[in-house]
Amino acid sequence: ACEATVSLGSDTGGSIRLPGSFCGIIGMKPTYGRVSRYGLIAFASSLDQIGPFSRTVEDSAMLLEVISGLDPKDSTSLDVPVEKYSTLLNTDIKGMKVGVIKELLSEGVSSDVSKAIQNAIDIYKSLGAEIQEISLPNIKHSIGVYYIIATAEASSNLARFDGVKYGHRTKDAKGLLEIYTNTRAEGF
Figure (cartoon, rainbow, N blue to C red):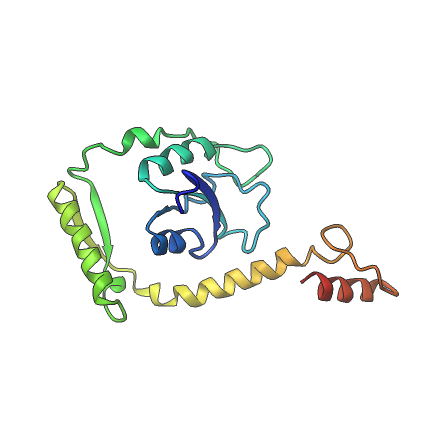
């Protein structure tokens, strides 16, 4: 709708990247620890990241410069210098290596996606990048592992919403067990 130049989202398993691609905008999940997660209600802590949405790569780069860096309120944020991402956008990529995971280009990939990836590879080659096929044979297990980690961490994170310290608390309970069960039934 072009109502905002940039915005923020949270991404666990694609919640920035997928809507970005479906809507024709930039959606980026930064490296873990690059952006503070302070204030985020976590689904799966080790997978959740805050990242930018924007209409251009340049806008995402500038927003990432602003939101990156050490946050004393987030022990998982990294204490490393923040690069000027926006100044790196037009740098020469001649000699850079771009890894292409062969297992992600085989069975189950639509022809449109394969064509888009091949077009990107051709562009990188024309700009002087070295394309290197790599193999991650265990990547076939990644979705299963994701769901094990995500649901285990979600369970742990949601356990705190029991009506004692966080969130909604039932008004109708006789005893601790009813506080927990009624609170969760009403709140979730």
